[in-house]
Image 1 (cartoon, rainbow, N blue to C red):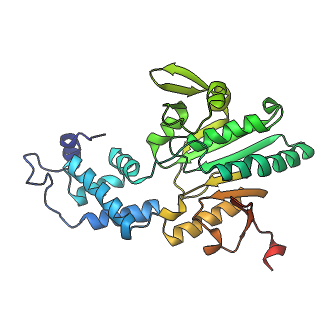
Image 2 (image 1 turned 60 degrees about the horizontal axis):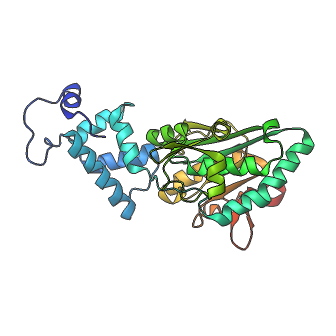
Image 3 (image 1 turned 180 degrees about the vertical axis):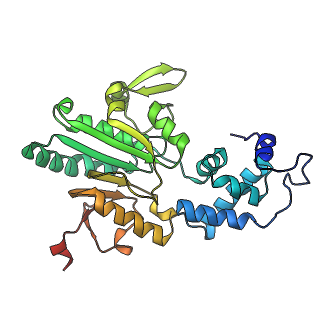
Length: 300
């Protein structure tokens, strides 16, 4: 999305007229580094090393497209306007796939889900909630929704919900639509595609209503307060590696308060909560691992 730079410069009080070489005016008191620091402060991302270089490239892309100087962009970022949305969309990672990391999906489907469903059934609480944090375009939450419908007897008798959140509003819109291309559905078996997706033609497949009813999409910044819990399972895979140490500790602390006492947290294979918190213990199979909150007696 390229922003209409002439209108935005006028609203920001930038004089009309041709821009100097490079497409931007002078730098009155702010440079790209301050925009980078804004990203770190408001989104919690690491801004050093290769990640910082990636973020800086995206910042310069916006500056070039809008014709703004860094101080002008900073002023606009303080409002929930198109620049903030564009920057957020550019700096977030949208790489995803259906049934990503199959051993983890198997651990959820074959071990965690049956255990928790049986516990809920015995207590008479026919409700099951998951949180797919950093859901991107929806491959993960819709994968989990398929597992729920396959793994729960009489799913229509249950209150099932998968909260799919992301800071990227364009990604959230994709989740709400529930429409994917054949390439995006590459990890979905032919049998599952035939059962859970409608062929709209023109290489577009839409999740059936039963799936879309389970998945609820909402914008959310992981560095901010968490959504109301409790959640039986939280998936937050391959995201913590992009955040600052302090932000990671904050996120993990939020998870401890909104996951069910017998619930579980699934992280990426290179993410270890024990490096940041003593409140998680691992539950592993030969090929996958998830984490559960330690109870007070286990921490002594």
